[in-house]
Length: 278
Ligand code: SAM
Image (cartoon, rainbow, N blue to C red; front, side, top):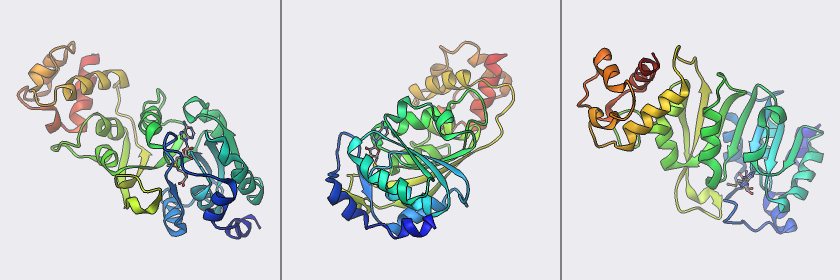
């Protein structure tokens, strides 16, 4: 039984020592060894038994082990070729439930590799984390190919993703993450949980797709949020001057042009984006 085979694998620290996997800063490597924490992350999407999971950056395979132990089928993309032998051992123990792709996650045809309906779960490399996240949320078609996102971020980035209006954390990332998704902070993770510990605290974020509001184009929403938050201290009548139709839209919608970007709800941004399209 492959779940028992995974539980019986040698401790991660031993695997790392045997394969000489010293953490590379350039590849954003901060490894997790705490089995309880890894199991907790793997539980965030709900039951994964028999589900497909796409993991970015398995490294020595700690989170991958926890995902396989749920009964999931995992496709994992790893850029560091030093990790491949350790991952091959894990693949062997998984009884064919782990497929490893050697390469850069930014260049993978994810929907084709992981399949439509896969859950994305990753302790992301910080240097590519936001780029991947923006790509996953910017899909033309909605809902996208993925069923849910469970992602480790620096705490400050996680707070920007789930931020409500009114504070300095609220901005383009919050609107992008919330206009057609539900985003929540699952739990914080102390920096000391990682080897080596990064300078900052982390947090796991969970995102599920919601219904996309009718008549709104992503490109229009991006133009409005880029302009509004690009000059976030200015009143909307100033910051939205360069966006064709935006000032008329404020008037039609009854949104006070003296307000500032961070006071607008996600729904108000959506209304402005819809109005400038028309
Ligand atoms: N998942 C492991 C864990 O939780 O211990 C490792 C997480 S570590 C923060 C990030 C991993 O992403 C590293 O293994 C690193 O080599 C890998 N990585 C970095 N850039 C990558 C990229 N562009 N594509 C795929 N993997 C990448």
